[in-house]
Amino acid sequence: MTNNAPADPQHPRGTARDRGFPKPIGPRRYATRPSGRPVLVCAGDSITHGAMTPNWVTRVADSLAPTTDTVNAGFAGDLAWNLLSRLDDIIACRPSVVTVLIGTNDALAQISPSWSDGYMKAQHLPQRPTAQSYEDNLRQIVHRLRTETTAAVALMSLPPLGGATKGRWHDHLAPYNAIVQTVATEAGVPVLPVHDRIAELITDQPPTPWDGTKKLMAATLAQRFLLRRSWEAIARRHGFATTTDGVHLNVAAAAQIAALVEQFATTVLETGRAGAS
Image 1 (cartoon, one colour):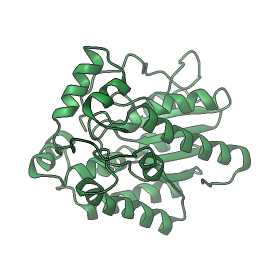
Image 2: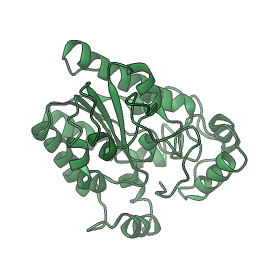
Image 3: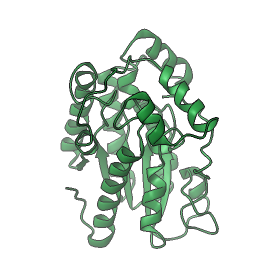
């Protein structure tokens, strides 16, 4: 996933329902102006950031306001190593709830040497990403959140790649979702079933399978920000039921994540229990 996407005109980066900023922003800015209300931090990559995909964090913030602040700690292009590296900013928000959706870029880095080379250069990684490095970094993320905050933490399974529920891309992603489950089980935190919920929207495999390249990402950006097409129109044009470009989500898929996060956060904040169905 690219890390230099233009800002979405529907995603003004202001703090969640606090002091005149109507939308979620990043944790560093929020930590300088805390409100004293409970704080939900949504951590992840571009799927959470919401410039190249419908902004589900804003939808959650709208639902939880005005009693809870929502912070968008998604950053386009991030692998688990990058999220771990910026975890201090998230901890500084003193969150009540943290959701973590990270790993799609780790999986993409394994598609080909060109993907891996791109991440090494753009994300300044200390080593080439592997499934093992993903597991190690994810385990450290959860450990720090559990020991350095009082937040209820939930991991999220990774959404399907290529709009497919079987075949090459399903098999490619499966080990990473297995890692999410393993780390969560070890730490005693829940996994919000993002993959399964989005997979339910896929009734047919794409007529033209995703080719595993970035070319549809560039086409999506052009259609969205130059031609002003809707996310749904772009997804249909590319033949996907849940993504616009094989990786980033359309409105229906993003809504599934919003519903799961809203349910988890509401349960925690209202009852003090960290659970999700």
